[in-house]
Length: 295
Image (cartoon, rainbow, N blue to C red; front, side, top):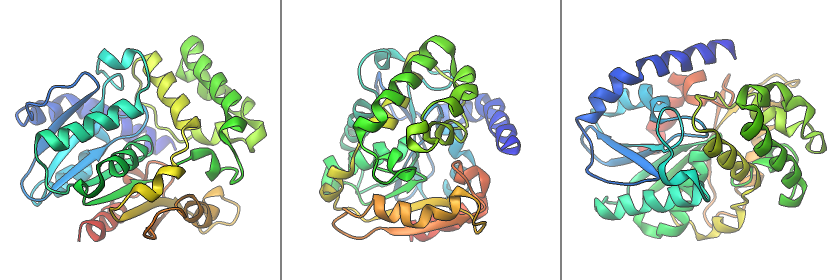
């Protein structure tokens, strides 16, 4: 965990230099919900980061893919150093998904592949469900259509709502560091779900209201009913452990159950030795899965 945090800090420190290069590839797309920069040439791939992360988390993958793919790197406003603009009020994920779909249409992207991590995976699922055959394929990275079900398969939105409210208030009034410290005290009804979520987020910070709202949505939004609307093939990548004492040893059945409602069965790629930040925890194994996904 400490190593991952150091890597994330390093990414944040390199963000200015990398962003300066990316700025030369601005897409001309204007949105008050997301930003998008483009790199490389070839078939289109959209990369969407997770909660409290920016496109910087994809830097390693982007550097390896840019020579063969045209990458569209999305960041949600209000995460990292981005001003929240319209994300300062209202729902975050649905609006971000709508803007990604608008970007696809505005640039006439030809069946782009979408790769989304965590919350970004949920955004990718929304885009695929709404865009139909405009999306070519989807990879979700350690992401579930309903996150609480990964902790307690029988969990419902009603079960997690009080915990999500506490999380929202904790970020709004205590800040994310206090939220991490108190994570173990909350969510006992779901077997420590809150601690499991907060312990693996890899927070990069951002606007407190956007963080609070986005986390509330991640904990309460149930997209399982939208899975039958997705026509694109879906690949699910997740961290796994052979250690039977680790919660990660049980992820196979949990992720397979989470995506059971897809009209076409998903492809599952478990990455041994990875936790939530798969692309940072095991970059080589992750890239091998990406190469198989992109064909």
